[in-house]
Length: 78
Image (cartoon, rainbow, N blue to C red; front, top):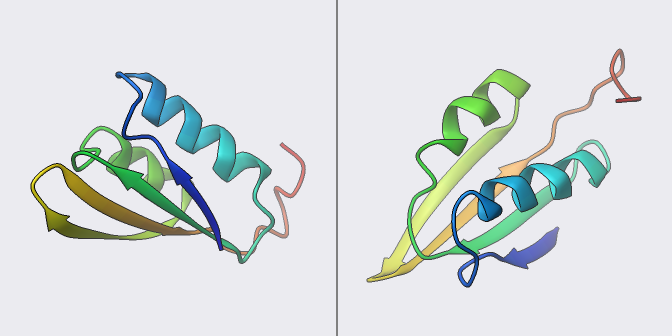
């Protein structure tokens, strides 16, 4: 699991950073994202790309998002 903190970034930088990290992440790995809010615009994109994700609210201004990258046998090269 790789962990990143995007809580200091302003939109759309968190989404750009998360998607870039996911692209570089090996298949069947996970990315733990620390953020200040639920990234509502990111969820449809994650679903479209086949990522499983779970969001945990840790308190005011504290959210963790665990994203799991699936095995991608046909699209290993992007």
